Every structure is written in C-alpha cells, then in structure tokens.
Length: 160
Image (cartoon, rainbow, N blue to C red; front, side):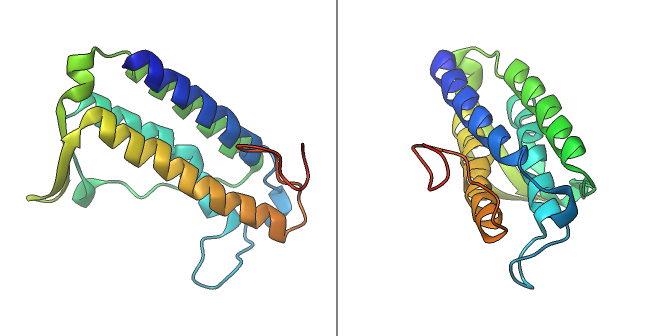
C-alpha cells in the first residue's frame, strides 16, 4: 500500500513543482477575477498543502476551528522552498504500516465531526487531489499570463 502511495505522491509532487517554478514574481498580486485568489495566494496554498500530511498521518483528527491562517509568501523562491520543505516532511510521514494508513482520521469544526475516513483516503483527498485541483487553477493562471504551461499528464500546447 505504502509503495503505491509513494509512487503516486512523487509523480504529483514533481508535476506540481514544474508549475510553481514558473510563477512570476512580478504577478503575485494578479487575479483573474475579483472572487479568485491572487497568483501568490494560490501558489502559497499549493506550496503548503503537503504540510497537511502531518496532521493526517500523525494525529487522529484535525480541528478547522483552531487551524492557523497561513501567511502568503512573497516570492517564487519562497513558494518553491516552502513546497520543497513540506514535500520532504510529508514523504517522511508516509513511512507508516498498512494498519496505520488505514486508521481512522477525522476532520472537525470544534466539537462537530465533519467526516471520518481512513488516513490514506484523507491523504489522497486533502493533499493529493487538493493539490491537483489547485495545480489546474495555476495552469490557467499561467496561460492567462502568457507563461508556457508545462506538460502535466501529457503534452501541453507549449511542451511536448
């Protein structure tokens, strides 16, 4: 179970890194719409998502009511560095047995449980799928700013 998870994780991290490395420092405040996150806020969110693995894999629950508000990073270098640090830690935290990966984990809001699922499912949902979702948004931000979009699951219009 763990080997498959690590292979999936390594692939998605590598692809996400390619996008974060293209974030333009001079466009971090840019937004495609007033209701959208800025380039910098979205990239910061993506960069910090791997850190959620610690709460999922090392704790039995996470309380959104006590979650800190992350500080937006102010340069591509800081965004990539935060991503690198988080991805290394997350990969270390994945060194669990099948029993540990299948243990229940809960997302809560104060005393209210929002849901509970096996840790491996929570990791795939809240770290991997969440990262993939926002990576898709980042690729659109790149395109709208005429920055070449890297190949992700296959060739892009810019890279084969």
